[in-house]
Amino acid sequence: MVSKKKREVEIVILSDIHLGTYGCQAEELLRYLKTIKPKHLILNGDIIDMWQFSKRYWPKSHMQVVKHITGLLAKGTKVTYLTGNHDEMLRKFAGFRLGTFSIANKKTLLLNGKRAWVFHGDVFDVTMRYSKWLAKLGAVGYDLLILLNSAVNFFMKTVGKGKISLSKQVKDSVKQAVKFINNFEKTAAEIAIDNGYDFVICGHIHQPEIKNITSSRGTVVYLNSGDWVENLTALEYEQGQWKIYRYANDAKAQAIKIAKHAKYDLDNDDLFKNLVNEFLTVKK
Image (cartoon, rainbow, N blue to C red; front, side, top):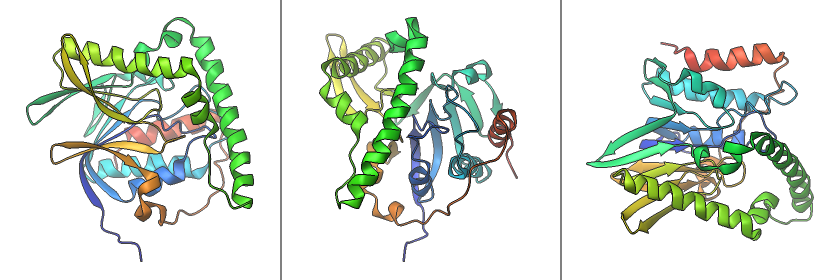
């Protein structure tokens, strides 16, 4: 029998969930969320993929994730939504507050006398800054690769083999991708050091990480929450320590049953209104 007692966590940071895409592992995320009781949940960008938002693919499990998060608000959890590039249309709402829910572009945390700088990270992506159309084209290609990956993993399962991640293998093997990740981490760290932060926390590159980065001007702890497409990871802060949560290592979460539901039969306008209402309406 699976224990129903939830694990209390001071801070949980999630990013790059990409709700509304084929790659989103919404059921796995929902299982994880059902095992924890966070005091502060930070959604660090690309939560809803508005680049590819369409009624053609919006399973009930994706809305269940949204409803679970809004349910946390009703239970007193502080929820901070930091905008990313795939949900950049929410940037015009930066500064919005309703109860314990807020929308911002970046967040500073004070943790035991140390300062943490939290933001999505697309500001450091040259492709995003100068060739957004190329980035959007890449996002579509990425989603197609995820679809192909699903077919491959279905075949692997039928022959008794484990899952593989084609996109992760591509990123790990292509030198330019590795260089981009290294440059991203170095740039974020150097700016954080120059501004006196002890921690810099990002998403965007789908690469979970915790490590010290040192420059000639100092040292900072760089953290990345990863994603819920390939890695299924989050950052957790408890008792003065950061750690990377990995769904693959969480037998309790994996044992939780999620009911299967059909997709929503709504047009795009109604779907978007439902999403906004879920985030902006706190049920008492």
